Length: 327
Image 1 (cartoon, rainbow, N blue to C red):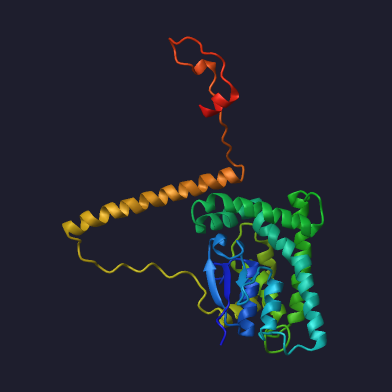
Image 2 (spheres, one colour):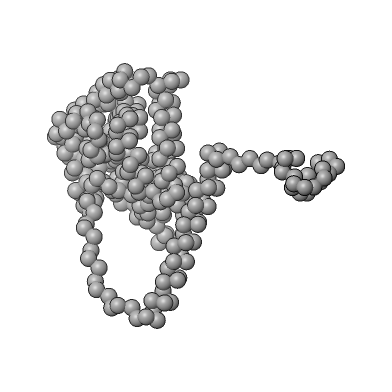
């Protein structure tokens, strides 16, 4: 039996198995198809084989990052959640997935990353709190710029419209998409038959964060909650396929330990302090190196001029460029 492949995703919160739409889509499809993946939930994307999340490390030593590519790979490995779909249902599924990416995805990017209050109060704070130092100082801003550029490309515009106009248009498109999905779902448990398929994974991945994450600007969440069958669909998948997801349990009270002896204390404290000092130095070095490499910090070297000559000495003959360099 082949070893399980490794899937790297953003860790979960807010009652979700992951805070990322793409990661949720892949996790849901893997659950629906019964793919035996080894899942690594992390908060540092640099720990993934691609430097981004999600990322699937295959047994063929390939790294896949796009949800559609990961799903296609799992199908080739005989883990196909769409196996029972008819040709018409398969075509309808693809059409709805395209609709989600065209109408709903831009609104999700806007509400999480572009809306200033949502970004500052929720998105940036969450990633800064969960990323390790010093990445927490740099990566949230880089992710913000990437998502803004991603939204601009999805919109096909050179510059994004003013926030107020953009928000109205994006909300209209997202509400229309959710209404169509609600009509297609009806009173059924899943979109096609009694088993979930790839469309269910995409709908869950895009709508579960809208349902569970509390943003100050909550227009999308309010509209989703008004569609009871669609919000119930997301809750049902969480209960059926991710039952262990929920708020973190309270920290356990440490069991009492015997007081260390004087000799133990003398041996342990220097090593502990040494490790703390090394950790601080490594973190500072990493942050400084990253700042220099990315242009956030520049270092200029100034040649020593005649004013720096020591006093009470007679002026020396002008030095050649090679002599200055050797000094």
